[in-house]
Length: 100
Ligand SMILES: [Zn+2]
Image (cartoon, rainbow, N blue to C red; front, side, top):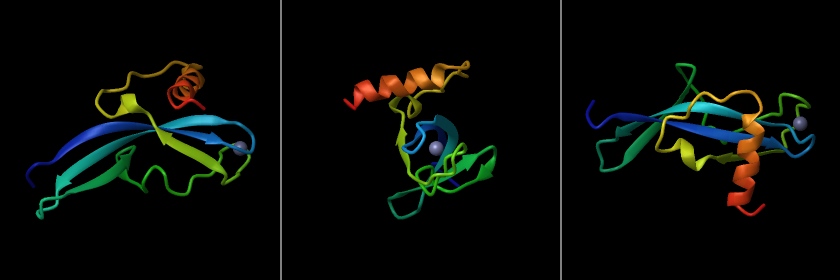
């Protein structure tokens, strides 16, 4: 396999029913698909998983009315381990970025 590389992405989720926010970190493996394109595979915890934006359920109220968005900072840099409480701050920061 040539031209394979990996990056990390952090995806943030917000439940529109109860307001819970959380994030999940993914490892993204990128492959040259041999046809001039790029194939990507998402992994979480070393296991291949569904794409981050697919079919998420709120861990608190089980609602499927979940908003999902990726963080710009997750695409090019290793995300430092966050301490408790910083997830919420990051969501507020993203809201400012997107003028929500
Ligand atoms: Zn919820």
